[in-house]
Amino acid sequence: MKAVVLEAEWSPRAGVHIPEQDAARQWAVNASQVYRNPVMELRTVADPGEPGPTEVILQVGACGLCGTDVHMYETDDEGYVLSPYHLKAPVITGHEFSGRIVAAGSAVSELRVGQLVAAEEIQWCGTCRECRGGYWNQCRNIEDLGITIDGGFAEFVRVDARYCWPLDAVAERYGSEDLALEVGALTEPTSVAYEGMFTRAGGFKPGSAVAVYGLGPIGLASVALAQAAGASQIFAVEPIAERRSLAAEMGATHLIDPLADNAVEAIAEATNGNGAAMIVEASGNSKAVMGPIEDTLGIGGKLVLAGMDAKPASINTIKIQLRAGQIFGTVGHSGSWDFPNVIALMASGRISMDKAITRRFPLGGLIDALEETKERGNGKILVKPQS
Image (tube, rainbow, N blue to C red; front, side):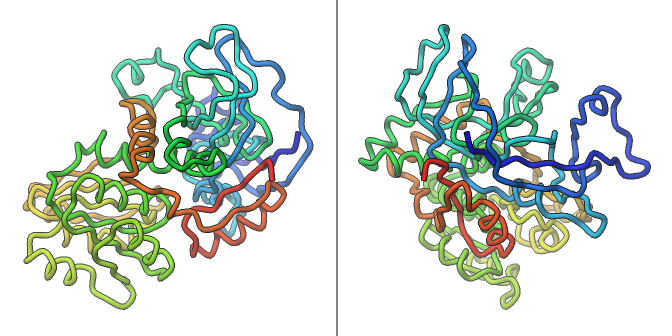
């Protein structure tokens, strides 16, 4: 089958401690500290073969291009990848995907051949202390489809059935299996936003104001979820005009260009000085946005840190304290019914993530898609391996 494979050189930076077991298998907790000189290319590789008893084989219908994919390809001046997340190379990339089940193992009982599903990227073990405590995204034995094990930028992929969620209701809403697969591929990034806003932070009271800094796919999903949850005002803060326009389509009530407007003053004026009950940091540029965020957080407000940034940023803790604010670190999308709840919102029409899709590429066009994504002007770019 055809697949996009990432190769990179294992070369830990000076002074970086790598646990012995991770070094032995070249498994990075923070890829930017150990992997350099990446090469990503389309190859012919072995297909996944027959599924194990609890596994399914998916014919990939659509796979989203994520900032993490770009950061595994982009490098700093020393050639190290920019991604601060896990990585084990070589690997077939792509972790936001949906597909059709073409084969199912003998013990798979809740899914059927021919069914459309979305797959969780995070492969939690379910038995470690973290999983048993409900922290599936912090699994001690975590693996990640498309990052540490083979993923969805391929014609076919092997997945354990417990990580797959049916898209039947989404297909019924849209009346098109192809569109259901496209929207289904956005289940993962939308669930990342859902995990941060509702599972981790506990949501906000309907009628509250919500601000979202950064309007990549997770930021756009945050806007859509805020509208669905009853926010009265949704502030979308983003320097790229195209992304602000997408946010307006998805429910943002106030569009703010931080390069031209003062976000703090705009939010204060619109909320009569009350600020935002919830702020989602989805830019991944903490140093640039943390100051305005501190000054727009309302009393008792919640700050959700969803953007990933390996660089340190300062925070004025007294501002958070005086506002009785709360900060929630979040990563991932697994557990607590994040996936099925997001799928239900998509199927019901409460959120329309199809509006976030701006470009589609065949599998062979992935490198072109990566280059285009570097410009940060798109919403969600999809790769269609069967095209």
